Structures are given as structure tokens and as C-alpha cells.
Amino acid sequence: QVQLVESGGDLVQPGGSLRLSCVVSGGDISTYTMAWYREAPGNQRELVAEITQSGSQMYIDSVKGRFLIFTINAYNTVYLQMNSLKPEDTAVYYCNIPNAPVNWGQGTRVTVSL
Image 1 (cartoon, one colour):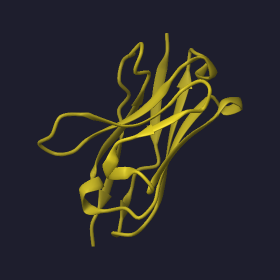
Image 2: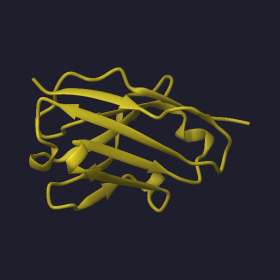
Image 3: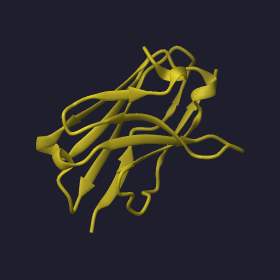
């Protein structure tokens, strides 16, 4: 059974950077499209970024040019590098497999504030 464990969230000032990690166990991420999602207070969970098995990436418009999704297959981990953070990026961030979703992990909280 695939399990997901996210980490790396923190309180950061606007303009700062964070790198989120999602360690995947019970499956080989090189065979999946992987994605990061976020859920801001009062909002529905939304897909933020996605990377296919071949390395093609997709981002929602609000994070293009600021976020980077990548994987290190040897670590079975998917990352989200977040730069130039804005208060509107504040959310709990999750990873999952968009084409075959598994149980959600606990997420990692990102707070962007002075």
C-alpha cells in the first residue's frame, strides 16, 4: 500500500523560500505521475503542480515561475521548491498520485506572513 509523508512546511516571510518533500513508500514514483496539492483555509484542495514519469511539468498560473516540482527517484521522493512566496500561498500542502489517488498524508503547513 502506497503511503505518503510530507514535510518541510514552516512559517516564512513574504519573498522567502521553502522546499517541501514527500516521501513515498510502498510504490515506485518513477512509474507515477506525482502532484502537489494545497488546501488554504476556507478553500477546497487544489492541484498546484504535477510531474509526469517523463519529467513533464504542469503548474497552476498563480505559481508559474516561482515553484518547481521535481523528483529524486533514488530517494522515492517528490519535492516542491517554492520561491518568492506570497501570503496567498499559505496552506497545507499535500502530495498524491493524480491518476490513482491513495490515502492522503497529513500534509505540511506553509504559512507566509510577516
